[in-house]
Image (cartoon, rainbow, N blue to C red; front, top):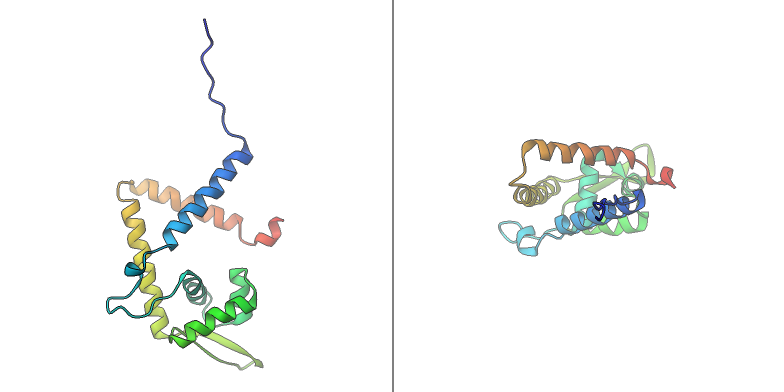
Length: 161
């Protein structure tokens, strides 16, 4: 008589590799909004996911120096500077001299930038609403709790190396 098979649980490394893949796939799908859904009702200019990240970071930080935005995004200043320039050209953010250091500039969202950020968030929330339509409120809350706990654990990736 053969023994019942025992399901082998994945190792911690295997589980975390699967978690990383799932997070990457989720982010790719969530931020790869089709162009026809990303454009506004009047077909106005929309921003790409990098621009969305900069606008979201400015919304989180409030008025901030370019270096603060780059640090928050864990990106090089030159990369963020290019994104900010494009956002400024579309009227989504503005800069003004820093009164504490006239060599530096402070960045902030414009009214149009806040509107664009809100519109893009609404599109993503609709995608999430559709994706979780058959989930219970408890399941959505559990997902939120776990994602917030993970985000808190990853507060500063430099501390984890």
